[in-house]
Length: 237
Image (cartoon, rainbow, N blue to C red; front, side):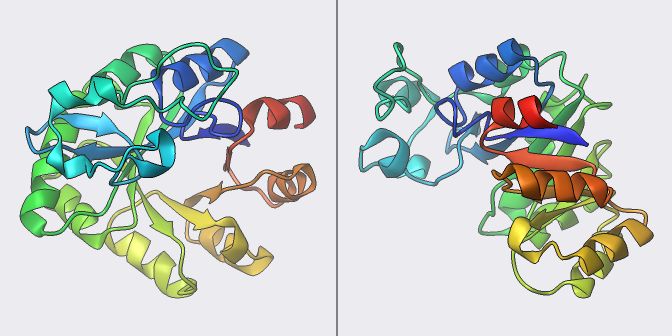
């Protein structure tokens, strides 16, 4: 079972930052999950929220920004022990740090229209060139999956599930030609794990921060464990 750092390693380093990605590189983790959004100038950035409030304390909406605005927002501001500024990273900056990783889950956040879905998928397909063996594009948003199919993306894809639709999600993942489902931990019963594996779909479970649960999922045959505490998990699994 792969230990996959959630947004880098958000329990051990500032989330979705170059410093956070370097942190998991340094501790020996070679699998990571992070979020991608597209700015108004088409730049692809790594960020979970659509505003800067939670991670930087500044009330600014992400989609009002372009690439040149990013340096002023420090995502390490709440980390008193972190000794450097962590600006919002571009996707290509992130990929340079994790170039040797063997598993990269790129979550595309929901978009407002099919046009926006097609636009971000096209840009993502270009920036991920060279990562065909390691990258898997994931999303909750059906529009993203439809765009991936329409553009015949070369990359593997995974459906993310956080609502209790269970077996319908397996059918939807197969419809979207996914090779993986990312189940929210609270939905990942023994039965649904077995059903997913029986459909020849790999599984990543998020977010798992307790050792006993991680060991249980490993015994059930889950392939990927997305955790805020990869160093902690690595010491026990």
